Length: 240
Image 1: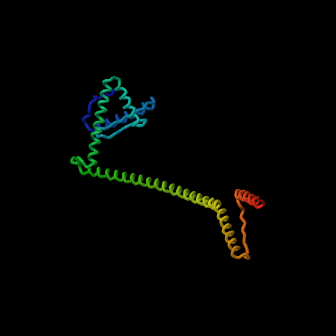
Image 2 (image 1 turned 30 degrees about the vertical axis):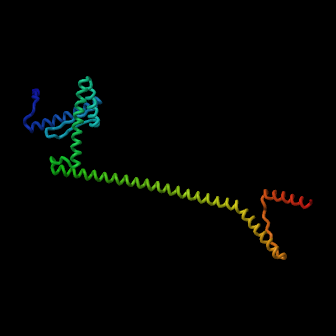
């Protein structure tokens, strides 16, 4: 005797309804798995029971399947200008609703429009504010620490540059001192010899029998030429 047909309608008996749901759910998930394996298809099945419990199967990421589904539906909706206009109207309405929800949350976070909240809602908001405040403080401390490190690095760099400049100044000062001694050292020796000569001349004038101390210095080439010329002139005058 063949199996009789079952009328497709809601089962009134809750026990029978739950048993039927369990059996047909298992059969549907099994068929979805077989379809995915045999036909190399991407299959995703989501089932919510009357009690709100979720049952699902997918041979790929359910999120990627949902994104692909939404994209395919959007492409199908854009087959005509009227359908595209309706789609964007729905998108605008959804975005407007999200904006209103975010504005309401922002006002509540700022301490406004709290009359309709329960104690539990206020406790949740308080916990969120404490968590956000802790994150803000951590970020501020991190930025301050990075700024201090950057200032220390710049200070060390400036200190090294100052040390190098100080060394260069000392080196230039030493070179200037050596040049000063080379330029003015010979003139001082000539002046000393002149002073000794004058002192000896005075001693000779005062005491003809005094001992004369002479000190020779190497004259410059220019001065030697001038002195030789003057001496020649003096000799010619005497000969005349």
